[in-house]
Length: 623
Image (tube, rainbow, N blue to C red; front, side):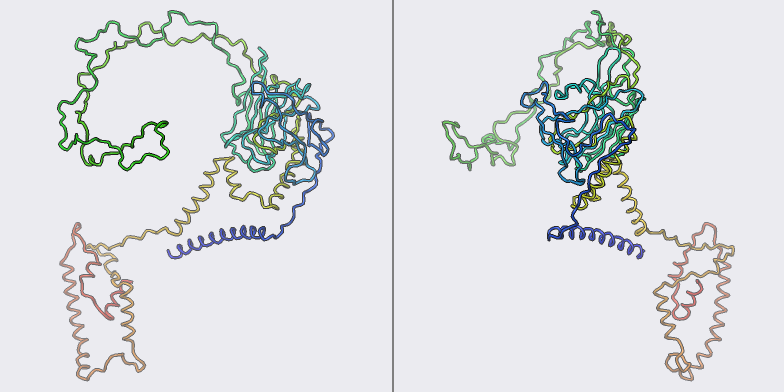
């Protein structure tokens, strides 16, 4: 037990030392930074332009090489938003192509949102339009929210065919085929995936939203790092959304978008009208019922309690409230403007402890004769036909969707957003039909950039600690909280059981005596505890022979010696007589089956104690 407690103390001591050691490290780093000790200077790596195989022909790819300018590939919108005030209708947000604020790779540029609290719109034409057929559709880009994101988007709009003809007129109403990317406002965020699908029967185009995960956290916006967003849509309708190469959510256009892509087979007939004689009332008033003669609607609900009497201590000469005698009129009180000043009312101290003050009035009670206004009771309506609804007819616009048939070709890519944060950087925008191209571009751009950003954060001391990483992970996947709790709680329980668990002590086993002989009959329990054994051992040591071979006792006279020599023979005789008497007594006494047996310990307590060597011998018989 003691060793277990010391083990727990030792584990706690090690934990405290490790925590203090970490604190000391952080304090040393802070002291070093405050004292001016220079850390290893971070040297950005040089940008290497990504390359695809000669056989790869993406529909669009822009990594914003050095020398790129707004107005070449990317055209800033000059349009205005519809149905908004003219002051905020313009797309007056500023764009630029350049490096991020913290450079981790020299020469790595991107498309940057430079202003906040404004509408931004910019678009670029695809090198070759993407036509939905038998090939996969892949859209991939990386985005970095350098200042975080309070409220705003970071998504792409893949514009439908025809938008490329006038990119300067790009606005929120410009038709798009797919909208994809992150969006956040407040404490929640999401990664949009919206399809605009055309009904082949009536030609209407409707929006269909992919089902979002329950929570994705806010790490993509709050950690100020670059994140890679990848969308893959297959001709079968299967889609997947990945962030930083890890799957975020997936589904199928035929089953996992809202509203359902498949229209209902039957719809209500809008031309069907409810018949005039259709009665939807389940109950009606009983016209045959009449008000009882003794029903008096004029009786009040409450009446004065005539049996009430004024309490003996009611003081009618005093008012319940009186003007505050200590109140004074404010110095700036203007009676012409504010009227006549009156002191505020306070409780009358003369009424304290009394039943009341002022004019006494008897209380009111419920009127037993009150029955209220009489109304006819309701009965089942014999003409009730149920709730009416228009009849169902075949849906003239029904069709069995094929995922890619209703998606318009994509001819341009645009970014149209409102944001409350600036310095949002878009880079490595790719539209292709090859997953291999997307993977290769990610290896050559994002993963290198991710490593360099981590290296920059470590060199500048701005990297997130392990605790923040745990919090970010749980924000992204809340079920991890249960894992963390179990990982902490179970070891603590195990340590507690190991250190403080108590083994059960076996109950004392008293031998039960009976007429039948058993080995317990010859067993003598140890009636000497540890403390008494120590005393006995000391007595025996005192009785050990000395160096001369004699006992350590005072000398005995010759007469006394003769008496001592005669005692053994007499003691032997007495001993034999007592033993025979005891045997006869045992034989005479028979223990019945239900007769209680006195425990051996109680017998030992009642029996006279034997001291010296005899006591020690009795103890040894139980060994």
